[in-house]
Length: 479
Image 1: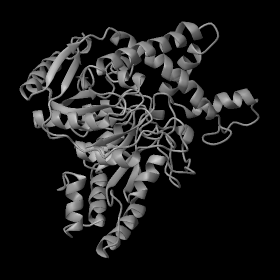
Image 2 (image 1 turned 45 degrees about the vertical axis):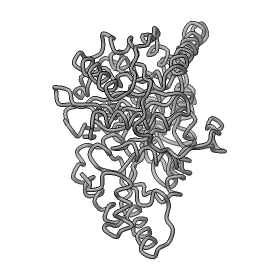
Image 3 (image 1 turned 180 degrees about the vertical axis):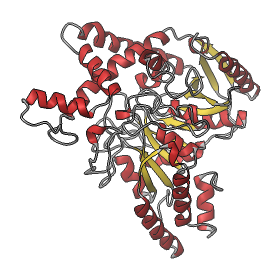
Image 4 (image 1 turned 135 degrees about the horizontal axis):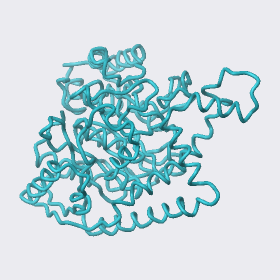
């Protein structure tokens, strides 16, 4: 791993003249080549990254001012637009497409002199939990290449896990940052819905999607969040809430709840359940209170989530029709309807087609009230119950996923089993609250697993402090 354990450690060395931005970029470029088999990157911006690093080194040498993220090497998920660079959502339907503008999050990174080193692989249109749905092949877990890294932000997770960048950006619609962070043994944050602008994020489900951050420690995630969060005139759903300085509060006792229905769910690995119970005892020994809370809706959240997200996906993905941009069928003399069908059938992968069809079905006449309206009602109940619990406690802690990373191909023929793996993560997206997954320990099978922490809307400062407290309680070092 890089000799610098954090952004602050790198900056200390940079301004003391012990390293340079160019050295760091070359280090990561070499690592990317060495680990090419992991398939984490779809494209690496080698020349551009080196040129920016060289320019930053000159500014540092001359004593000129630089941004707060100067020289920080960042990878971005291939659903986040970067002007003049390809963006495909890991789909053949956008193969070769070059973005005409940058996402607001990217613009803010660049404004603070971060160096974006490349686009990271993901499930097609962020639909998946394993990164097996990419049109460009699966990403491999760096700890065990026979295992999935999680998804849909698998490339973003592995890039941090395998030391291929300092931090990375992903997107989280139902757990797509937290679940791969858990499988890879690193930190993954999904902020409050609206905390980070979605401008320039290719939409899957607009009322759920949120850009998230992967890192190896809480402080790095916090500093990146601080500079990319905030209002945005290009996104009406971006919150106008002031963005605080995310300082970690130490030595504070926290009032924490865990969901009984989550911990004693039959789908949770038994060894993991025992590990969580021991962990709760350790939290209490360190001064926090940990209390069981009832949450009766757990078995309803996955069905509600997939009804709502596929409905939104059906609408959002209708723009990819082969006319305006992206893949166009090579067949000639087709009627317009046949042209649309052929272009979309050739361009979209199997999982994307499945979700478009499901979304179209639940929105169709005769089924709208039976499915979509009911799912909205469930969402309202989930929001109310979570808010009720969070009004009494500083945070909710629960598993991130029911098991450790499983083998590639193990669940690819059982989409229902795959969807049920999201049972713990979709809660935060349904309610729009912030959540983070931090590494907890290793399973007897050798793979890591983490714990998920959820707090009230816009209380990321508390969330990061509690997450740091958790990592210090366990003295966890990311893999």
